[in-house]
Length: 148
Image (cartoon, rainbow, N blue to C red; front, side, top):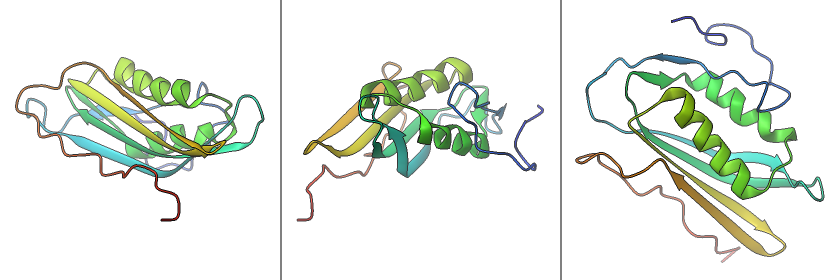
Protein backbone atom coordinates (compact mmCIF):
# COMPACT_ATOMS: atom_id res chain seq x y z
CA UNK A 1 0.00 0.00 0.00
CA UNK A 2 1.44 3.37 -0.98
CA UNK A 3 1.62 6.11 1.65
CA UNK A 4 1.85 9.86 1.12
CA UNK A 5 3.91 10.66 4.22
CA UNK A 6 5.94 7.71 5.48
CA UNK A 7 9.62 8.19 4.74
CA UNK A 8 9.06 11.57 3.10
CA UNK A 9 9.22 15.19 4.18
CA UNK A 10 5.66 16.33 4.81
CA UNK A 11 4.40 19.81 5.61
CA UNK A 12 1.68 20.38 8.17
CA UNK A 13 -1.65 20.51 6.27
CA UNK A 14 -3.40 23.89 6.30
CA UNK A 15 -6.69 22.33 7.46
CA UNK A 16 -8.15 18.98 8.52
CA UNK A 17 -9.96 18.78 5.17
CA UNK A 18 -6.62 19.01 3.33
CA UNK A 19 -4.96 16.41 5.56
CA UNK A 20 -4.48 12.99 3.98
CA UNK A 21 -4.63 10.05 6.34
CA UNK A 22 -2.66 6.99 5.27
CA UNK A 23 -3.77 3.46 6.09
CA UNK A 24 -1.60 0.37 5.80
CA UNK A 25 -2.47 -3.33 5.99
CA UNK A 26 -2.97 -4.61 9.51
CA UNK A 27 0.05 -6.84 10.25
CA UNK A 28 -2.10 -8.82 12.72
CA UNK A 29 -5.35 -9.01 10.77
CA UNK A 30 -7.72 -11.43 12.47
CA UNK A 31 -6.30 -10.75 15.95
CA UNK A 32 -8.39 -8.89 18.49
CA UNK A 33 -6.28 -6.09 19.97
CA UNK A 34 -6.41 -2.43 20.90
CA UNK A 35 -4.30 0.43 19.53
CA UNK A 36 -4.03 3.69 21.49
CA UNK A 37 -2.84 7.10 20.34
CA UNK A 38 -2.52 9.91 22.88
CA UNK A 39 -2.09 13.55 21.87
CA UNK A 40 -1.59 15.38 25.19
CA UNK A 41 -0.88 18.76 23.55
CA UNK A 42 -3.69 18.93 20.97
CA UNK A 43 -4.78 22.43 19.91
CA UNK A 44 -7.54 24.00 17.87
CA UNK A 45 -9.19 27.42 17.81
CA UNK A 46 -12.42 28.67 19.38
CA UNK A 47 -14.87 29.37 16.52
CA UNK A 48 -16.19 32.46 18.31
CA UNK A 49 -13.10 34.20 19.69
CA UNK A 50 -10.33 32.63 17.60
CA UNK A 51 -8.38 31.97 20.79
CA UNK A 52 -6.52 28.66 21.16
CA UNK A 53 -8.13 25.71 22.89
CA UNK A 54 -6.06 22.87 24.33
CA UNK A 55 -6.94 19.23 24.91
CA UNK A 56 -5.53 15.84 25.75
CA UNK A 57 -6.96 13.58 23.04
CA UNK A 58 -6.95 9.78 23.39
CA UNK A 59 -7.92 7.55 20.46
CA UNK A 60 -8.46 3.82 21.02
CA UNK A 61 -9.36 1.44 18.21
CA UNK A 62 -9.49 -2.24 17.40
CA UNK A 63 -8.19 -2.70 13.84
CA UNK A 64 -9.78 -4.74 11.12
CA UNK A 65 -7.98 -4.91 7.76
CA UNK A 66 -5.99 -1.66 8.07
CA UNK A 67 -4.25 0.51 10.65
CA UNK A 68 -3.70 4.26 10.49
CA UNK A 69 -0.11 5.27 9.77
CA UNK A 70 1.07 7.31 12.76
CA UNK A 71 2.90 10.10 10.88
CA UNK A 72 -0.20 10.87 8.83
CA UNK A 73 -2.28 10.86 12.04
CA UNK A 74 0.18 13.28 13.67
CA UNK A 75 -0.09 15.63 10.68
CA UNK A 76 -3.89 15.32 10.66
CA UNK A 77 -4.13 16.18 14.36
CA UNK A 78 -1.65 19.04 13.90
CA UNK A 79 -3.81 20.48 11.11
CA UNK A 80 -6.38 21.47 13.74
CA UNK A 81 -3.95 24.10 15.08
CA UNK A 82 -5.55 26.72 12.81
CA UNK A 83 -9.01 25.14 12.62
CA UNK A 84 -11.98 26.79 14.32
CA UNK A 85 -14.40 24.34 15.90
CA UNK A 86 -16.35 23.68 19.05
CA UNK A 87 -14.92 20.95 21.26
CA UNK A 88 -17.79 18.60 20.46
CA UNK A 89 -17.42 19.01 16.69
CA UNK A 90 -13.64 18.61 16.73
CA UNK A 91 -13.61 15.51 18.95
CA UNK A 92 -16.47 13.67 17.25
CA UNK A 93 -15.23 14.73 13.80
CA UNK A 94 -11.81 13.18 14.38
CA UNK A 95 -13.36 9.93 15.59
CA UNK A 96 -15.87 9.69 12.75
CA UNK A 97 -13.30 10.44 10.05
CA UNK A 98 -10.98 7.72 11.33
CA UNK A 99 -13.84 5.27 11.69
CA UNK A 100 -15.36 6.03 8.28
CA UNK A 101 -12.05 5.80 6.41
CA UNK A 102 -10.20 3.06 8.29
CA UNK A 103 -13.24 0.89 9.05
CA UNK A 104 -11.88 -0.62 12.28
CA UNK A 105 -13.85 -3.15 14.31
CA UNK A 106 -14.40 -0.47 16.93
CA UNK A 107 -13.15 3.03 17.82
CA UNK A 108 -13.52 5.45 20.69
CA UNK A 109 -12.13 8.92 21.27
CA UNK A 110 -11.88 10.99 24.42
CA UNK A 111 -11.28 14.72 24.14
CA UNK A 112 -10.27 16.07 27.55
CA UNK A 113 -10.41 19.82 26.98
CA UNK A 114 -8.79 22.31 29.32
CA UNK A 115 -11.05 25.00 30.82
CA UNK A 116 -12.65 27.62 28.63
CA UNK A 117 -14.45 30.26 30.65
CA UNK A 118 -13.56 28.33 33.80
CA UNK A 119 -15.28 25.09 32.69
CA UNK A 120 -13.39 22.06 31.37
CA UNK A 121 -15.30 20.16 28.69
CA UNK A 122 -14.76 16.44 28.10
CA UNK A 123 -16.20 14.92 24.92
CA UNK A 124 -16.48 11.18 24.25
CA UNK A 125 -17.58 9.26 21.15
CA UNK A 126 -17.47 5.61 20.20
CA UNK A 127 -18.56 3.71 17.14
CA UNK A 128 -20.73 1.25 19.08
CA UNK A 129 -20.29 -1.58 21.53
CA UNK A 130 -16.70 -2.86 21.78
CA UNK A 131 -16.05 -6.38 20.52
CA UNK A 132 -16.47 -9.09 23.15
CA UNK A 133 -13.16 -9.95 24.77
CA UNK A 134 -11.39 -6.70 23.82
CA UNK A 135 -9.24 -5.39 26.67
CA UNK A 136 -10.31 -1.79 27.31
CA UNK A 137 -7.96 -0.03 29.70
CA UNK A 138 -9.02 3.25 31.23
CA UNK A 139 -7.94 6.18 29.06
CA UNK A 140 -5.80 7.38 31.97
CA UNK A 141 -6.71 11.05 31.86
CA UNK A 142 -7.81 12.37 35.23
CA UNK A 143 -10.67 14.81 35.54
CA UNK A 144 -9.48 18.40 35.52
CA UNK A 145 -8.59 19.62 39.02
CA UNK A 146 -6.84 22.90 38.37
CA UNK A 147 -3.60 23.42 40.23
CA UNK A 148 -4.60 21.32 43.20
